[in-house]
Length: 202
Image (tube, rainbow, N blue to C red; front, side, top):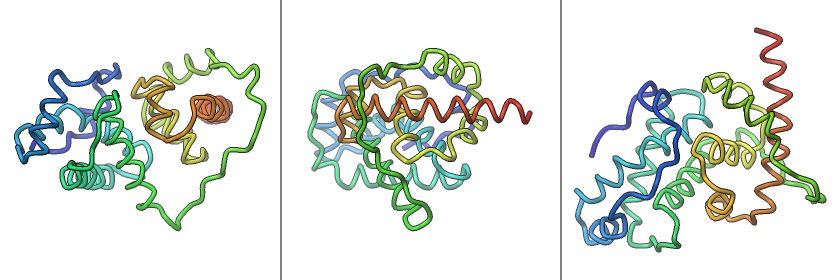
């Protein structure tokens, strides 16, 4: 398997959607039968977004690299449990990565639950999306995201850095699409405030 890519290689690359790998189902089937080369192809394709997802949620590159390695070791060990649900293999990997990060920070911080709220009129704030794109220096975004809840961080990363659809995010996080939209709405409102503060401090 290839090594976990460097921070520069990942963050300076394209942020376009990571499409399902061609022949992915066949590769997974072969990997389940013990073909390490086939799993290596899955690894090579999906390690950049998984590393980026983790890097945005931890404090440094070394932690991100270590946790990314653990994600793929866990995926290889538990591949026999994987069942396709019509989403790219990354959906399962994101679930493993999310749990690894939660374990990593368990006891260090708490995440606030999403409160019940009326979702009527909740739309994607276009101006905030554009602001995120314009400020897509990952260190700036990481700083702006530090006070978001874990769910809010996950939705922002998966939506705006990994370009997943709300349906894919809902499947990855085991939530409804409505809940994902609500989380995104609140996260973007907070990011708008945080990015504004950062820009004023700069």
